[in-house]
Structures are given as structure tokens and as C-alpha cells.
Image 1 (cartoon, rainbow over the protein chains, first blue to last red):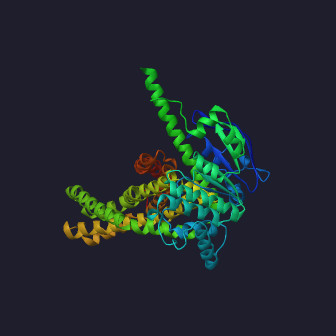
Image 2: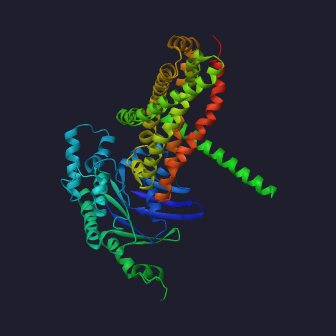
Image 3: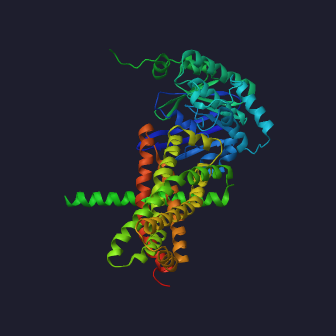
Length: 245
Length: 265
């Protein structure tokens, strides 16, 4: 569904992505692993056109979105939804208004349809009945769930997750991991999960890619990663920095 | 030493040119959005209430006290020359051509410009603007167009209110407190205040309001580095908008004086 070909991106004076190649298959959950600051989120945001590539191609259903202007990306963004690390809820709107936002923007005006779709999205993320709450009254985990409900309300074919479990306690992390799997089964959506959490990676992935020094260093099944004897991969999986006390 | 001074002056000039360039691109994108994208009337009306309706008190108080004190100062100077009856004309023409629009704009930049920059800046650092884009909504359509349009509508109306109350307060101070003849005051004011003075006030009010909107939105979009950046955005918006208003006012006064010359009857 999504192919990234020789993607380059420089931010400031640092070349963050230097020739990334990645293929994401329809209906699969592809996890992108990497150390903090390795460019995972930058790569993810390229997939929905939030960053402009310096060079290379990003093909979504065969269409190169790297060449499109901001106003031409609308149809792509209906196909590809993203859950931001912080949830990125609109703080001037209630939970219900946040989830209704993409529906109204897509031209749905019937209040009953909107109410039903909002309730359905909230039910999918286990937050039924929370429509009237304001984002400031939600915990970190709830914000991510509402952000996810807003993303899935428009029924995208592909969902991008930017660090979905960062900052959450182990129970909330496990809950989000299950939610990602459940949504993938229920919506049959393609998922791309950016994380550095190994538990999230192994729980949710059909395939795992490892981003290292601006390139895809590894791309294979979770079993292949588990069995790998490559020192860079082993150090990351086992959380070994190589430093001593 | 000379090289350092030249280098510093050069980098300052480059920064200013870059700033003007960014403003010009924002203006171009905004007008492109107004032409090509549907206008969000609900957001526009909400902004009219926020920007226009809720700014009235501060603008009216400014207008009233400026008119009152300006009337008194003019009287103190003119009284020595026996020109008491000219106070009304001086106050009215000054308020229309300069003081009304400029003071309204300065008050608006403090109240509205800062709020716009803070709101957009917060949205920027909390990824809400990226979320808008990800949901297929152009930030210019959603954030800039309603605010700039509301300011363009409200600016001249608020300037008119400020001028009206300033003239009223000036009249009361001159006639009730300082003893100027009401008939002379009104006659001279009406004689020397022309339609072109009103047009000049409304044009200036519109231009300054648009400047506030564009500068505040630009500062909001440029906010970065978390709380520090969000804190800096309103300050930069108020300072830059105020300076720009005063500079543009100088050139605009000369340009408009060619179209609407003062002192010809």
C-alpha cells in the first residue's frame, strides 16, 4: 500500500533520513523501531505528507505524494490517518467535537449520523459516554485513545501511530497494544507503528523495520528480529548501551 | 571593527527582508485561500465576537480619554492665542486622520494580536496544527482567514467608535469644563471635518487591522521550543505589530494625503 523509495531529509544541518527504502503491505501492521532521535517520527510524518521530502518517492496506492502540494494532499489524508504522540486533541473542543471534526470536514452534516459515528469510534477505544469531557480533564492514555478515535472516525485505510505508548504506565501500554491489534482486526486497516518500546513492537507487529543512522538497517518478521545475532540489533532489543558504571 | 558593524547591519537587514518575505507569503496564501477555499462563516462570526465585540471596551476607554485630554491640551495652547473656537476642529481632524486609527490599532495589537499569537503558537507546539493538516484541513483556511477577515471587518468599525467617543469626550471637556462655546465648537468642527477625513480613518483602520492579523498569525506559526516559544510569540506579535503600525502609518499618511488632501475645502 505504501512504498518509500530512497527518501532523503535534512533538518537544520543534520541529515535525518539518508536513503530510506521501505514497503508496507496492505492489511499488515509494520512497526518501525529505532533509537530516540533516529528519525522514526520524521519518516512516519512523510507518509502522510506532513514533511516534504528533499529527495525520493513516497508512493501511496501508486501515487507519489512527495510531489503533491499541501492542498492536493486532501484525498491522501482521507486514506491515511495519524495518531500523534501527544494525541494532539483540539483543546478548545470537547471529546465529541474532536471526533466529529473529521466527519464534518468530510462533508457529513446530519447530526444523527455524526452522533452515531462519534459513539461508535469511542466504543472502539473503550471510552463510551465520554463525549462531553474536555481534553484537559483526560489522562495521557485517554488522550491517546481519543486521538485514535478521532483518527478512526473517518475510517482511513491506513493508520499511522507515532509512539503510541510513550509516557504511559505498563498497564496503559498493554491496553494500547491490545487496542492496536483489535482495531487492525476489526477495521482491516494497514497500520504503521513507530516506537522504541520492544513490548509494543513484538505485540503488534506483522513486520518490523529498524531505522539506524538514517537508513533501514533491518526489515523482517518479529521472529527474524528475535533470532538476529547482529550486535546493533541485539543491543537495541536487550537495551544495552555499552556504557559501564 | 568596521567589518563587524557592517556584518551586524547586514544580518539585521537580511532578517528584516526575510521577515517581510514571510509576511508577504502569508498574505498571498491568505488571499489564495479566500479565493479558492470555502469560507468558514461560523469561525468568522466567532472571531468577530472575540476580536470586534469584546475589544470595544478597551477601544472606547482609549478613545474617550484621548479625546478628552487632547481637547484640554489644545484648549490650553489655543486659548492663549484666542482661538478657543478652533479646538473642536483640531480634535476632530486629528482623531480622524491620525489618533483614532493608530490608537485603536495599538490597543488591538495588545489585546487581539497577543491572543492570536498565543493561541496559534500553543496549537503549533502541541501538534494541533499538524493534526489539522493530517485531517485534511489547511491551517490558513481554518486559522488565518477567519481571524484576518474578522479583524478587517472590526478594525474600521472600532476605529470609528474610538473616534466618535473621542470627539464626544473632547466636546464635553471643552464646552462643559473649559467653557468653550458649544455653537462655535460644533460649527468649526463640522466646517473643517470632511468626508475624506472619515475615509482616511476607515482606510487606516482596515490596513492596520489586517497588519495585526497577519503579524500575529505569522508569530504564532513560527512559535517553537515549547513554553518558551509560546511565551515569546505574543510579545513578538505585539512589538512587531506596534512598530509596523507606526512605520506604515507614516508612509500611509503621506500616500493618503495625496488622495485625500488635508486643509483644502
